[in-house]
Image (cartoon, rainbow, N blue to C red; front, top):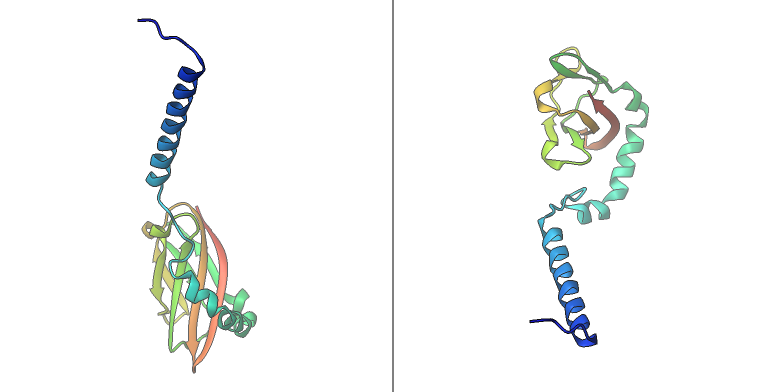
Length: 146
């Protein structure tokens, strides 16, 4: 049987190929994982002015936060702060499964140690957020783990 290539056959073949392409595109896009920057971005966006105020409260302390990486630990040197509550977050830009959130609990020399096994090579953002006498403070610093 020989196929007659008239305009109707060509149009039908084009439509079938186009539909196959669309179905393949839909399948591939549903297989990708969607990673949002923040899971609860809308409430955080509403309260962003609070975050701006907390940053300005901690502006003089920003340079006092120092990260040092050695063979076994990532060491965070803190200034002398006396937090009522607070957290240290190592935010990984491209994979939220690698984020690390720890309550602020410095030792007597105002340092915190994090095992190297908690990190994967790449860029992180250090976020330190604490409250001291009901006043909020917030500091962000980029950090590259090698």
